[in-house]
Length: 120
Image 1: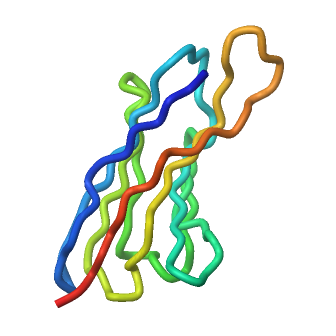
Image 2: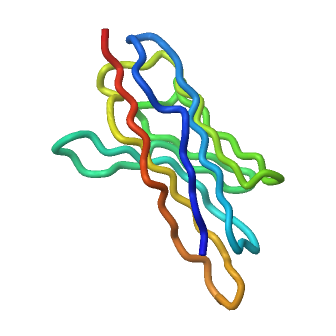
Image 3: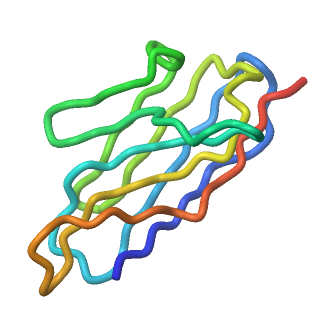
């Protein structure tokens, strides 16, 4: 199986920055798509940013403020969040599509979530 450990959430003032990390471990053969999602109270989970080798995709609400990167050697993904706004407050989840031994397709795995609160 695949384990995802997220870190880097917390409380920050509007205009501030945070960097989230998501480290994948376990019986991994390879990782394909990696992404960050978020869910605010009373709202559906939404895609924030996704990264595949050679391409990235962002929600319109975070374009120009957030940057997603990955370190393939460490099986780790990052989300640099700048110019944070109160509406960015949510639980942030990482997601990966991973191939494990004896599997013929990539399966989706989720992290436990990390709270990001933007407030003065």
